[in-house]
Image (tube, rainbow, N blue to C red):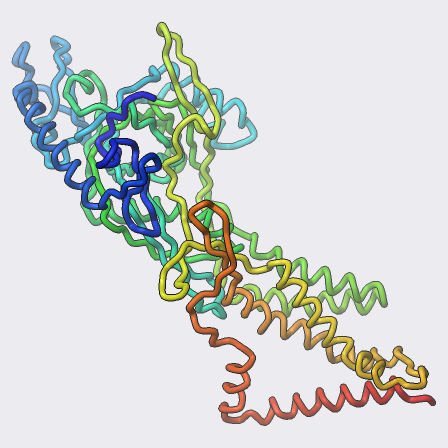
Length: 532
């Protein structure tokens, strides 16, 4: 294993092996000796690294003194706005901007370019030719000669983060909490470029990072950091939110989620990272200058319509079942219940639009005897994506859990309750039919009421309860799970609902519905048992 030069790498204070962050215990854990490392230890280590680096770095500060004036021929040269380096057009001398050299945000680490500009064009061209049906690919092919390499300003971020998550439906007041750990994500600090597109071409290989020296950027284009600390924090949290989103949406079984992110005791390190950039107005194409991974933004956002699946399935299910009895009744039922289902499921769901970013697989670029080899695959580099772990209070302690809504047990219980409610008159009649003369065709009297009531209760009560009180399984240290109950109080139980109804003013209509339902139930039983 190559030595990790990345100053944010964290090692066990007992044996020196790599340490990993333990979300539950909020410290770093050594997989080899089991020792724990306090979260403040990496902060001390980074401070010591910075002090040592500054001493060696500023010993060479004179290399950056002749800014805007060529030290070779004395010519005055303008450095392009927003860039850190320049080149003398008279003698070819190279220099850096003085305010960049003396900036508080001076990069502390750098990852050198591996791909040449021509090799980056080949990677981007290969992507465009493989996606010729896309409008963006045609734009890229038409302007590929404008691709340019830059050392872009970044902040490397490592540390714990958390999020409060809610489903968008107005009926759901359930709040979930996620914990995660940023394992060295890179956040761009140039306001001209779209950070989400740049994020799509990551990860970088951090073992190749080096302490910053001016010799690395001689003759290279270098962009300056131009965002403030507040904007940077927003970018960090936005990038983490996008990293959390796939896990959160999968766990909560919906694309309609809102997240409020907060950061804990994180480490930050300014850096310069190699990127090839092609900006075409609304389309931004980038190539990772170290690994060769390509990312291209789509010109327009796409509307999210996945929430339509559930009401569509229910509408077709109801219409299909009733069509087996009568086609006209089935079609009419699809219209009526379709309106009910789509209205209920759209509650709290506004229009959702998502950025779509094309990207190639994760890759690693290596050069052997001047020949470049790019290997693609999900396991080529360490995954630095922030993963969301849901936490729930169980017996007074927050524990990591897996969330499920429609477990086999719940599905079976729901089906039995639906069948029992709709077949209740037949069940009662069967128990009272001592002579065996019951006519169960009269059950249709009850079904006229029970089927619509069942569907309405499911939409208005059943699914709400399922989503507000999910099934939880605690994640144990060995990776296995066990069922647990959250400390959250169940305020939506049958007992609580009955209390709320009896305490409510003007409950006359509710009492009438209860009496009418009992009347229909007894009438249907009597009709089934009638011998005439």
